[in-house]
Image: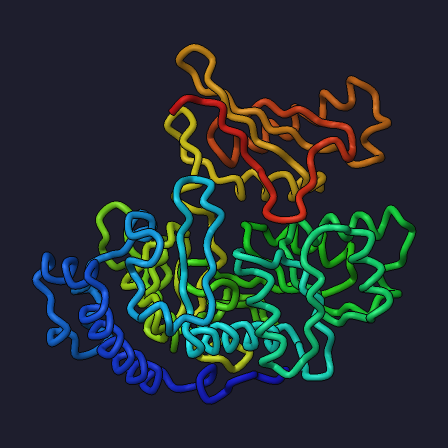
Length: 432
């Protein structure tokens, strides 16, 4: 399969290290001289730009966290004048002030380059139509893949999210080759295609690029079956650059990081100590290729591990394992750490419907956890006794994996809310 930028994606580790070192030195100088927040942070840490000689010195630098962006809202962390910006994106701000990200034209080119690598790794070619069903707007998903498609030389179809019947009509009429959206929305599109009696083999689609929310390999298999495609993962976060920070290749053995732009580390989330390759911890990125928002050691809260071995696809760039979850959406229930992705893994391993909802509550002093799962159509016609037996089976499987009891309630097909953006998997009613 063609590689979009082999001179980087297949470069020697020594070349990548030299490139990273040069870019880190330049980036720290830029941040120190142009961002008062970073000048203060580095001064407090006793670190000067003159102390940074190579990428090995990155551990001398202080961490940046999401609250730093909110505390400096909206433009306090920008290293360029507002007149030099060509684009602004922002998070939804559901847990506080939005995190605002600015881009120079060079930053847009970096972002588009990463997204183009991801599309190419998923088999994208210049003569393809890329159906972008991520949301457009302040959310980074839609425009990220859109610009990546254009950078590759392919045709971008800006479908945006929503109006699923129209999405399917466009897939048929425009003969889209690759679809890009959240995995939960891909499932919804696939279910709708099935319910409409359309044979997925009649579509020209051959690949899908899915991200913006956690999903499991079991869900990947279901999407591939529903849409008759190969499903690829893509990773990004608005504070760094949106989708295209890392991506699956055809080997689907981790996600290749664009480490010439975004230098990754794994740290112990409690001590901040850098962990060796292969160990799971919190993912940290330093934006060594960006001008407007040069984030230093940004703590993503995603839990994963790194692998620097050469991939069978020929790429030499470091791979990050699919994140196991986020340390900030991790549920602590009766002292047990629970990730929604663990629940999804159990459900799909039992061939259950991937539409589920976790409801956490507190009765007296005890936390309770209920998992609502839609039944498959054939199960819906089962006896009450049969349904209760299935609920018990799922409860036992969850207990085995999570080391905590969860009540399971099987729901009628189609009864749980569907999402055309990020799926809402957890309702926490506790007053924590």
